[in-house]
Image 1 (cartoon, rainbow, N blue to C red):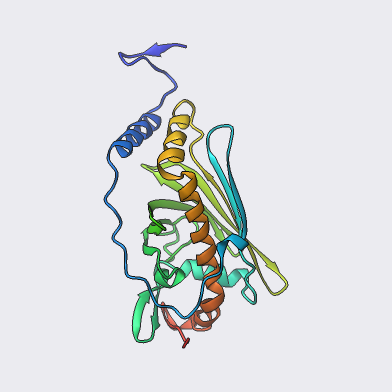
Image 2: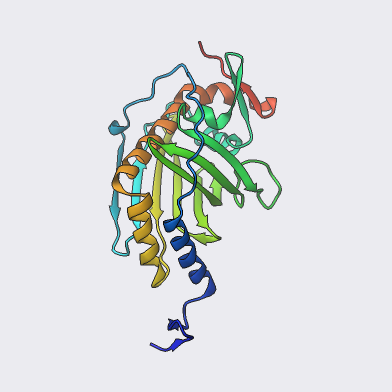
Length: 253
């Protein structure tokens, strides 16, 4: 292998790869400050046991993590309603018992912090759309999770989110929505890691051992199942108010 420079780096290592390597080393050595956690919301429903939903994870031959979750069936909720909900998620508020919350806080009663649009879709449309970039802060049990993602696809059939660090892809999260018997079958397939040559294995080792280790993956699965299951309790209510702008009232006792 031909090498150049005092560090003996091969010619095919490009600046983005070197930037990713330096970023991984920096993150490895300096963990971010804990996310400030909002008080739990007292919402009038009970979340189901996530273990009754189907899902699994495995490590691929390249060290990337592959996960899938089949959510509980969303009865009387169409894929178009789910897509509308996600479009509204970072830009809307909900009033319940005289208190106004970000819609993101209704989506999970205890584990959502902030969700915002970093960059609008190319057509300037608000909210989550194809071409937009979002940034989130949330937590899964004791594990904080924060990051940005580019929405490569977004439609009534689902969405494809590309998590990015320093502009480089570190995974793919595909949400698939299918109309079935008057409701929606909802599945999420995720790949976590990098397929960059040489540097990818280092990135994937860091992600597997320091971020998405087995205990965290289990909590993340629980979180996903709980938040999607919660749509059954409030989405139809706020969807009926969709002509009222970006503020809704939750009519529950």
